[in-house]
Image (cartoon, rainbow, N blue to C red; front, side, top):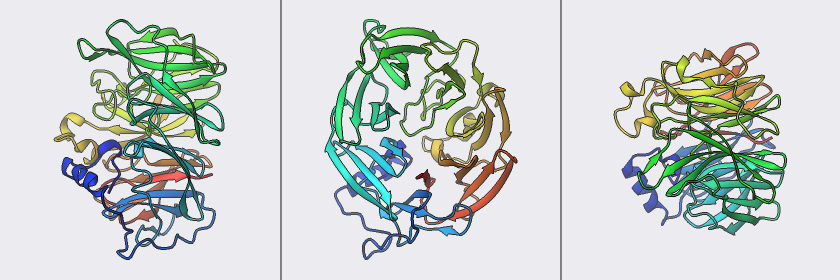
Length: 410
């Protein structure tokens, strides 16, 4: 298995994954890749990690039957090598491969992930992505984890149109800026960041905000700071952290140890910025941890109508015995939060389960892959926020310890 994103395997498994890079990866059948599934024009897809590689499959129905990678799908182990470097837009998947220094465009159609084009890419000092944002229908901007560099790619022309480092205005001597979120705001970009003291090796427990003119990417202006929670946005590109609703962009902070900013003393919270504004709304601060006994949360998906789904790490002091427990320990809860009332309105009726951010939304319903270690497989569950109803759907077989990732293609 070459799914090195978010390092959810043990140290030995990671070492074996690197060794596996020198060998060709076969399909789940020993006699090579099989024909694609017979689903035409599917609405959804899933990537399932197995002992023989990671397979992307089309899904005709999320709510019935059994989904299995055995003899089906595209082996994406050597295509989408690092899960957190994946950027999706409809049927198109974009990926920065840190092993071969390339940016690729791939399209999932006819049940197969097809290579559209790959270009050389080495414009960032590190090729492990921390965030991305779409500047237009054809231009995506992204940056590496915890630094001040960016790149912009025109995905239609498959060209790097601009790259470099954000203006260092507001960065004191012997410090560096760490960017965690970038949000288009008309002719400016709103940036959430942190400051790291290179001399003392301390990342301050504060959220900083600024703006820069777009498209020139000049005239950086510091617009505020806030010490209630940090970091403002995600350290890992694939984790959901921002969404728009009624003229505001809402931004989840991710202070969680290991998977986030490593700031155990700070709560998980949601801030917001009004469209066209350059500062966080001073009257809005949704402290989620305060309503869950100090637990920290990660984003899963925005459902709509002011409701978001999160996973919550329950009582980590008791449940974390070793590093890999952050992914595999049955300690996670699914929460529904209301951003308007600033309340945790529901804990979904599951036992404590394994870590998963695998969720998609369709027609106001959320579909999540739930990794219950006591179940006979990973099941897809549907949560209908309008009726507050939870329904079990299709079973996903053949997965290793990682939760299969769901994707909505339309």
